[in-house]
Image 1: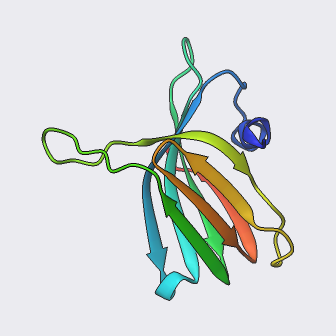
Image 2: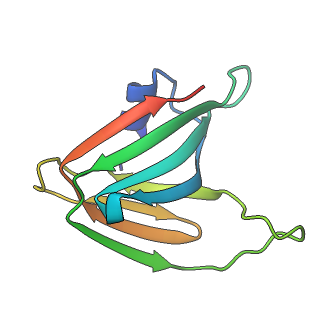
Length: 115
């Protein structure tokens, strides 16, 4: 599990909850962008960040639940487990949420605070 590693990259303490708020493909799937946030809990404020996978070669997507909000908006998915893998297509990223699972063989991983 690489949640503590993500916290280190964000400069946050590890006690909170990660959320995936949106997933977008760019350049026909060559880049995969995940808009996320980390909620470390009081007294710290939530940290929005973007996880971008560049030069993707293979993407496997598994949907576990179809959750609909009464106002027909998509709810964020709670990150259950993540293994960041290794770049240059050596080892895939494996991400599991309460709504979907994702496995991506990628060239470069970028984590960027957006807030």
